Image (cartoon, rainbow, N blue to C red; front, side):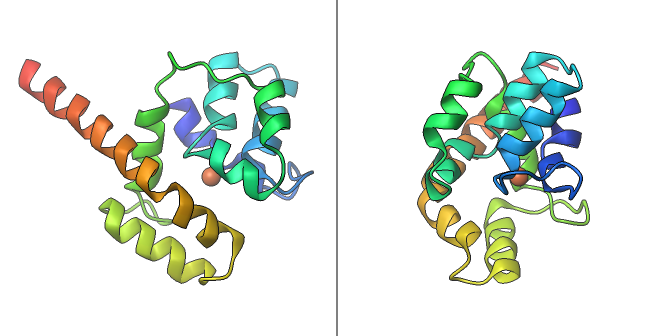
Length: 138
Ligand SMILES: [Fe+2]
């Protein structure tokens, strides 16, 4: 839950250094002494490893924040990509349309989404499977 609230903190003007917000946010949280699990989730949120290639920072991200696959990356991506900018519930289809409309087709974010979309959809599907299992068990 903490990573869901904090994942985009790297966009804050006071936190922005490189302009690659997962890296800037994770560095900021590490400096403040946050739990490394939260730091790692922020560093790798929503296919940041793919976005890093658009910033020529994939090596830097992996070195500073080695990915821990035991962390709930799919759950965080699910929250990010099924919630609109004003907190409204969206399908992943609606969310991707919203992102592309806000940034425009040539923007780095839209180009990143074009590459990451299959992995984003797969992560949302995995999270939905887990959610449906959890609902059956309740
Ligand atoms: Fe983000």
